[in-house]
Image 1 (cartoon, rainbow, N blue to C red):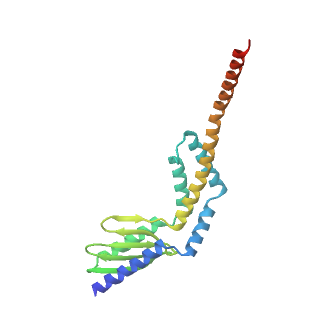
Image 2 (cartoon, rainbow, N blue to C red):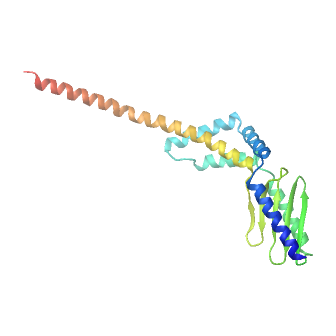
Image 3 (cartoon, one colour):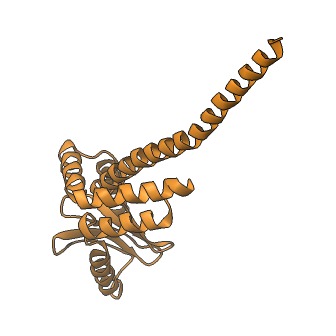
Length: 203
């Protein structure tokens, strides 16, 4: 019986992993829209300002930019991951006290859900967001691991693209400004050589 439970559990894990890494078009589209909504005009302006400041010292993505983006992501894009993990840990702790050789646990955590294998040797768990994406995983050997959602990935990707374009533009202007005096000096030197050569030819 236990072998059948383990086999079924492994099959479920494989299926969920496929769902996680092969996002449905609906999940991808919703994530893209959520990311775009989080990138307001104010946030975009802040991203570009950080890019210009970083370009001045030629350091890509300094910690101030990273802190800004992560804080905004956490507040406007990320799921309630910490709360869901806390509820899952509490549920597993409650079940563990009366566990046998191994118990399968599947339950709702408000809008979130979890699936776990509770065993005496090893315990694993997965926590899912309301749209079905896995947002955290637990292994008794390594503890909790947070997993990014498609919306979080999209938000960071779009923010980084805005930053990259602003940084490159600023660097190009800085390089152009630095070359301008050199060209002027080059013209002046060329004119001086021309005049000197003309004087040498003159009787």
